[in-house]
Length: 278
Image (cartoon, rainbow, N blue to C red; front, top):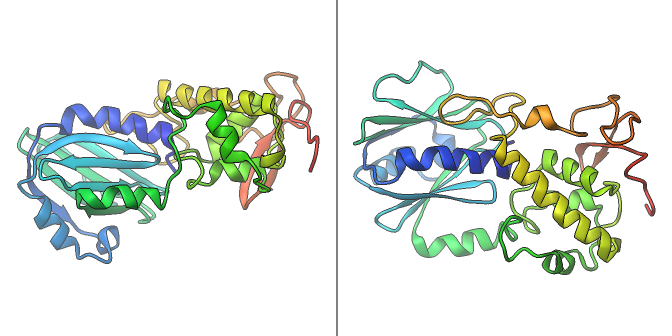
């Protein structure tokens, strides 16, 4: 699933193409994309709208329209967006929606597994929509180590599971949680609320560093993720632990191991990330 760095990369690539353009036509061919709303209803509502801005909240893309409505796009596991000059998009059996813009560009949404969603919300619905789903943005200036500590206080879940809970922190997924814990030298099964103040500060820095590195390298391409112009990301070449079972740790040379935490595959170095209390 695309995580914060992948979605932020998509946002940055799409903003120059979409902002200021008007949607001339819209076709949504997969009813699962907009359910329970009929796809024809969403498509009709989009036609004639001018795109004011493209923003991000956690793993969601927010296409803000001049009318005040917001198209909220969640890519889930295999969703992706691709733009090209009018009429030049390649044929694709997995294309679920297409927008034609007055700028002469086409925007296509493809999704192999069909778990992604498009929701067209009124402006006054956006705040409660995300308040019920997402915690703070980990790269925001307001996300300080002190705020992180308050979020962790009293939490009995493993720290890896805590980082994956979107209601606690927005946008962090399996890849960047593992990479951040390795950077901070914290075992993924440590109880979240039992981390020391020094460990919290280390993890706060490590999480932000891992996410920023992912954005710098335009995300991780492991299977279906590509940028909107069809390029791949480069973060997969910089993983310290994720997906590296049996390979030597970049810090100590010991082999990386894999366990399951909260139902998710988890990679770490048992020498550098010691289980002080389980």
